[in-house]
Length: 469
Image 1 (tube, helix red, strand yellow):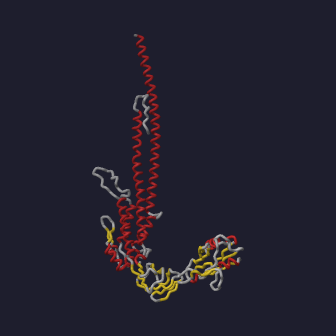
Image 2 (image 1 turned 180 degrees about the vertical axis):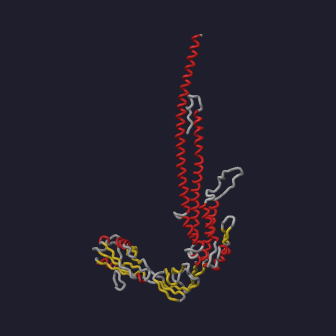
């Protein structure tokens, strides 16, 4: 409440200072509540920091919690004519590959040309039917005579999503042709095109491979890919072949010159990177724990805690998470060739809780028995394995019904109660100070009146004494 400069003029008393002092004394009772509010606000923010740190570690843990990492392979081709990708179950080895023919999508092009792309070709409404092999259903497209220009036909076919794409080719000298290409490669996806309604349009773009017509002709032949793998002949409608070699997908780019070699090798680099990323994320989480629980000893004779202490110092929620994580990482694995993280080169600093990785030891473990490392870390992916158990706990801690949310809700509730207490106390003080001001004002008026009366009486006495003299 601001000082009232005019208060006390009538009485001659420093009522403004007295009122300010009373207000300061009353408002000092709000300080403990403000201090608690600041403490709980800091704790609420700290829970958010903790949640973000756990979420970051969860990302790295999820990335490591994949059995495929530990059976990963890399591929090397002796020719740019083909490449390969593998799944985690591919077997390391070498394959001799020869590609003699690539798969192609059929393209049909009109033999007759048009002098522009806007003039209608048909004189009556028609339907265009496109039939492809491979058990596909025919697609029928309605076409009005007015929309039977090259542009109209192209757009009608493309809008029908018939499994083909149409385009217009400028062949020079002001002449244009219509071209239609199948979306899928392979001879089984060859097409036939028929027009019902207008004979001119049928003559222009009809196509049947078994009948010689003046309509469209095959400008690119529909054909399958032909190759041999270890001298075994393979024919496929696609240049992406996923069913020839188990867990290996071949990607054909060109024909080869004689036999070429595809080498499938073990690849431990992905697992090594995921492990190192996991350790880095875990250490970052430990840094967050340390920051949130930081303690600075108080000076002798001082009861107040240091202001630099962590907002979650002594917090049971954080301590529970920290203890459970340490327990999971320290528990030995059963039924695997590796029983502990230290056996693959991951050790714990007892003073800080952070992890460190012995690169040489980790690489040796992955080279010797990558699947054993994976079994220790991932386990069955459901109930066993370090990253699996860590993942289940992280999901629980971070859930909407987890311990962090419960702690956050508790702090929020306390903050709401403190706000209500503060507002109630502040309102009480404002009411009290308004009453004091009114009383002081009345006192000022009364004292001013008494002073005036006193001055008047004194003056009258002085006048009377003077007259008698």
